[in-house]
Amino acid sequence: MLISDLGEQGLLKLIQPYCLPNTIGDDGAILHPPAGCELVVTTDVLVDGVHFSDQTITPFDVGWRSVAANLSDLAAMGAVPLGITVGLSLPANLSVVWLEQLYAGMQACLERYGTGIVGGDLTRSSVTTVAITALGAVGADRVIARSTAQIDDAIVVTGYHGDSHAGLQLLLDPELGRDVSKFIDANDLQAHRQRLITAHQRPQPRLDLLPILDRLRLNSSQIFSISGMDSSDGLADAIVQICRSSRVGAIISRRNLPISPALTQMFPDTALSSALYGGEDFELVLCLPQPIALELVDQIGTGAEIIGKITRSTDILLVDDTSQYPPIQLDLHSGFKHF
Image (cartoon, rainbow, N blue to C red; front, side):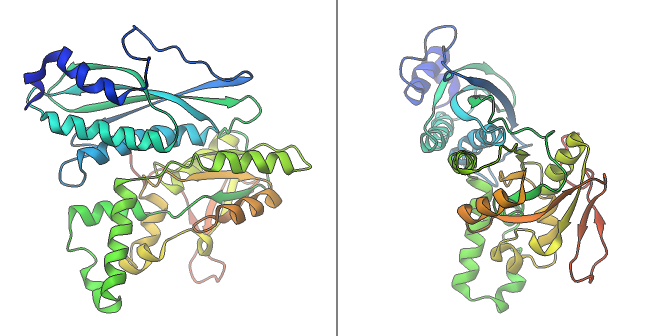
């Protein structure tokens, strides 16, 4: 069955079970941020052929990723989700099954993080487009901004980087990585491939970190701010964006970059580039006082690292502690760009 067979009312009836109860039907949803909280709003647009394709991702995973991207932006601001709206532009000849799987993927991700769909819009188009707006709430004293990094702050990365980019490359060309098979046990090889592919298809927004940050604030004897953003456009991009917004620089340790064993073993020659510039890892890059950073990394566990510190100079340098490699100036030109 195709979208054109259902018509607009049929489509609305199909979508309604995926939405939060008592929110669909009026001209808008009414949400209630908790007392003392600010409202955070973020929007992402995903376009068929640009952000996803049938070659690399299922409709379920399109739904998951579209939601995860928005929830990651909320996490990067320190906000808990209140709900999302979904705007869809769909070709008339799109399969109804594709649409059902899209919403199933959205719902699976939303349920994991305790939120849901509260509204949206449908229109016909020649290209499938998924536009999601996420709404969240954050206490006024809990906002994470890019512009508040302080000199000597530690720079924390919450998880591995480069896996999503490598997973995409494997999906585009399954023969990639075969040349390392003679160095890796067959079971490990398969596990590595699946880890990298899953990192691309089912990213995990780091909303789980917000309670940890709240506990660290509560237990700390000092009042401190947290600066940061998510790394959806690449780790180097996030570091540079934070430094530029805060008018500071950074020294990043090459040795401390969080690169997974799967990426290192499958793509030894390109692991560093993928970690710095691959993008779509949806981890957080946070700047905060060194003692707090040490506690945070300890509580997060595997994949989390202190990768460097904020400096007074505006240079943003990747350095090698062993002096085997010269310093590299990080920039915004090597990662993904829309235009």
